[in-house]
Image 1: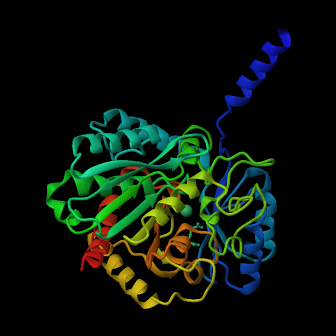
Image 2: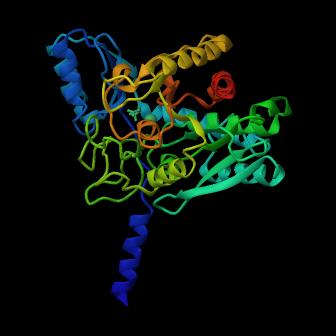
Image 3: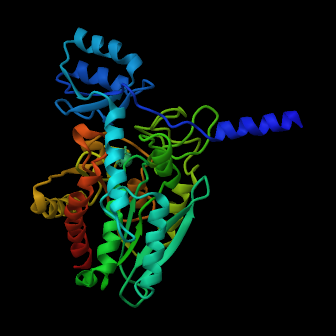
Length: 411
Ligand code: ARG
Ligand code: ZN
């Protein structure tokens, strides 16, 4: 009996995991000027502890990396020895998180109604908003559960349609595949809000159907709220470390580039392609609807990029010109709102090679010719994510871009 009680107490302690803190974590910005400097920074991406917020991608492109306190002295010494100039963007990541949490608590308690763009909503709030919409507008909106996360959360989607007939073009949108990229779900929620609740936008679902998945990795997302703010992966337990990078887990040239086979890496591709129930859910949805899906948009952050396939090779897709030209239209529409600009190009050529992404899979394996990974804006010197006060301007300008996508699909 004693042992049983002891065992249960231990289990309880293990389950009530302490939140992780970022005290003394600094964020550095470095611009590689030579091949050697770029090589040094690329090598660091393999080092445990270094968390790249902006990956080394090209000469003269700013690299942003979060570094834990115990390796800062060595890191700064290395940079100085190599004569590499650096700047400290954030001196103490924990204090930016604390400040932002305080502000969000205030806007959360002031919030009214079932959707809000003044704070980052939790998974349960997101699900209840979708449920409310489906209940309130049954002729337009329908809730679909496309699968479940490892920890058993429903992966919910909202199908929005004001038309009849079965062969209507569909736009598939997801957000939140990377847990810490908090600005992505609100963009999807604003899309739902505007398409369904603002009658002036009824025309947008007249000829086109929308399926919107605001939180594709809900376990990871909740974990960023309760435990580790900058968690990126799923929450599958592996033998050494938790989680798989779901955007390296799709079975299209899996593991050929820019993905890791080490469990503890932030870009761990998984023990095998489609090891994660979250990626399986999207795969199954894609295949079941591949005839109708004309456009796939996956929202990430950050960096202001309109990326399109391929992510596994630097070769251009056959419809590169169309993908680029549509990206230009979208960028123009976004820029017209408040001057925000995006860079447009293939993932590999603009960022870096990274195989196993959902966009490559949608295009390469499910035959969705138009697929984009949209890297939304980040938080600059206040942290990885934009402060909650920026959710509103970002969702508004992005909405204009999404309308440009719609117009192209409709016409
Ligand atoms: N930042 C994203 C990631 O690392 C970019 C993905 C672009 N798409 C791709 N297939 N590589 O997952
Ligand atoms: Zn991402």
